[in-house]
Length: 356
Image 1 (cartoon, rainbow, N blue to C red):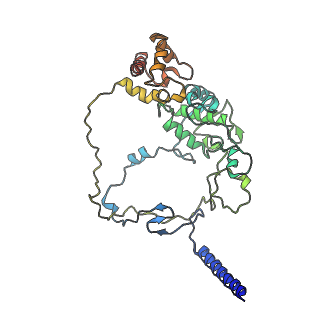
Image 2 (tube, rainbow, N blue to C red; image 1 turned 45 degrees about the vertical axis):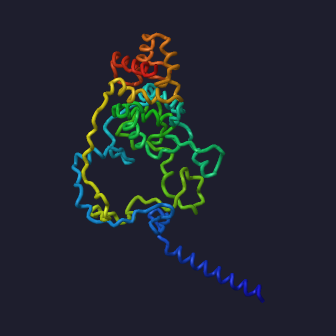
Image 3 (cartoon, one colour; image 1 turned 60 degrees about the horizontal axis):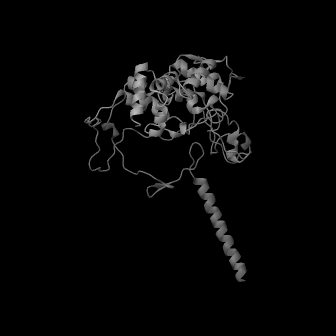
């Protein structure tokens, strides 16, 4: 009798638990991509702290940006082509630029260099391995395997490369480097693989189709076609038109939380008293040379390494100047910097004198 009553009790508890779970699931909020929206409790959203400050009257601060201010800020290149400058560049020209500006860090054909700089080519299909679908090799996130849009590649090169001297490339040079990196990754444009004769421009840029365009879109975990997925799993469905949008946060709100001292609206920077001068050679070193000469893994003599520079100087200062001006091993001529021979020699002198 006791065992029968126990079974009935456990059954009742199970039914009640099931009803509670079903009820919770029915009322559970979902984000527009299908992800669960959890409640904020005691200032925490799951494991993350949430600011629960009262807000009102932001309109009392700041102003609307001018058209020129928006234009100066709006510099990115979008997947739909927004922000692409007029210009063009060939794969062949990009190959030359890559050898001069990029190979010393990223290796020949983007296959990877030394010093921890990322590999740019290869890895196609390896993202499937992170889902446990095939193979044992870890995923390799390169341009050809991971990046969803060519616009991201163009924008990154334009604004951040080459590492020692960013924003020094013309638009045509950026088009050429983008075209070359697409070609070594086997990317197609208008259905045909990009070859050495291909010229990339703002006119045909949207013809480029990357290998992983859907790897960042939400996918419901119940789907059974995971072998077609190249990216991380998420929940929900893709929405491209008339999508639900969360209620926008008004900027006409004020913060009223009794800050002490009060929040300052002064935007001027404090005056800094200059106590020392920095030579032009030192500034050129920081901008154009430190990427290699401050990283022992690259193989170039590191600034401050007395033994390494003593070995360099043994060749004779004229030979050191000539090697630097003309380029040696992985170092491009003058380190890729736009300097006269005299200015470059001053940078060499600075590096030698700083390493004695």
